[in-house]
Length: 71
View 1: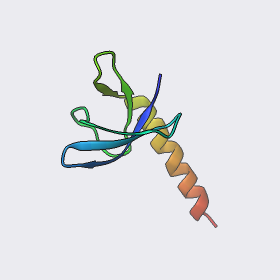
View 2: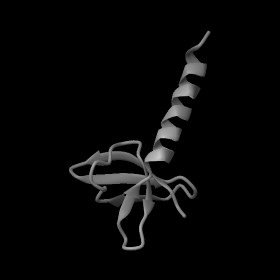
View 3: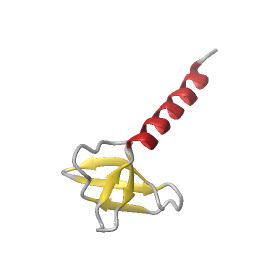
C-alpha cells in the first residue's frame, strides 16, 4: 500500500508525495488533515490519515533534528 505525505495545503488542495516512489499528486485532503500527515488511499479513491504512522514519523524527525543541534 502506498503512503503519501502532505507537503502543503493551499486553497483546500493538498500537494502530496508518495514516500515509496517520489510521485507527487494533488488531492482534496481528508477532514482534519494538516501538513506532514501521512495518508493511505482508500478503496473508494478517497484518502485516510494514518495517525499512528504520522505520530511515529514526527517523533523520528524531531529526534533527528535534536541530534543535529546537540553539541
